Image: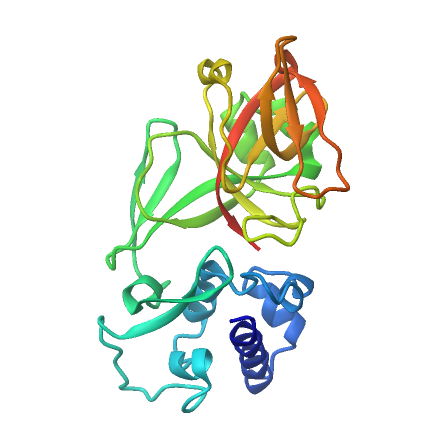
Length: 273
């Protein structure tokens, strides 16, 4: 399985060379750092979001060649892939599994989307082919101080921060934000772990739910407190009114933080790196 992932990576770099685009620029333009792409062979470095971006920007690429090495790099102009064709996509564990082409179909950026908003002001772009993307503000962890100054002011937030879109499968009613992580406290070479620099999509957990405690989740939580923003697992709610925040990297030690000094908590539901 790991060898298949490695070969797909090699073909992506071959395609960059074929297009005459520098490999580093090619990978970064598709939303991943070159270091992340080249490393972590046992993981889903080439994830579904990355492949979606690749196929969106280069619809002429021959999917069969990309995934198996068979055929030419680029498909013929009148090649049509039937909806029932079996295709390979990478799941959360980095293993190559089967799915239908409809899950990895080419996304046409020239489509005019219908724009919808939920009650929290999150914008959804609904395209004619059924693709749904959510547009959210992107808050870098490194911009913690700037966010704290204006997090209650929607106008200032839009002036201060850029936006990012994530592909989603439905329109949610919650409050969503995007984040850019910093640090490797949640990275330990596991299928659900997250490296520094990853883009995260989080759904806010209402304060009225904090007293019920927090369950283990796939990707953890973004905790925004007075003194910092962290991507952590929440181990428990303590009797003294603090939360125990833990990491997946054993080099990062757990610590307690007073719940009264926490401003927001977001459940991470999607990542891109």
